[in-house]
Structures are given as C-alpha cells and as structure tokens.
Length: 99
Image (cartoon, rainbow, N blue to C red; front, side, top):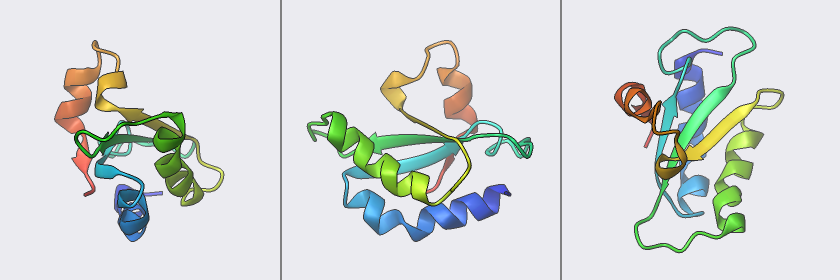
C-alpha cells in the first residue's frame, strides 16, 4: 500500500476519528519516508484535543476506527508523549500530518 493510499483512507474516516477526540493525526515511519516493504506496519501518531481527559477506552476508541481501515496490516499507534525519547526527534521530523 502506498503512502498516498494510506493517507486517503485516513482522511476518509477523519470525521469519525475527530468525533473520538483526536485533534491531529500523523503517519510516520517507513510509510511516511516511502521506504515501506510489503510486510511493513503503519505507524500512526495521534494528538488528542487539549484539556481532554483520556482514559484507556478514550485512547483506544480512535484506534478501532483506524485499524478497521487496514485489515491484515499491523497498526502502530501512539501519542507524542508515549514516543521513545531517543526516536522522537526523527519521528517528529519525518511525520506527515494527515489532519
């Protein structure tokens, strides 16, 4: 799957994802860099609306919508704060904002 195909699928569910409290969505990793292989996962970074209290179910609700768009493909799902500090600068530099 190409980066453009991934972004198109993500944009198609933007209203559903935003309704679950997501303010911004990014693709990062091999797909963002156009280096993905057939078996590559899709790495997604979400930013929730500021000031919104996020419990586990709130955190997972957007993931369910996003995961349904890519049957059979593993989805990496994270918030900015949960990124490993060693990799965070590179992820932030190469991430592509979807919305």
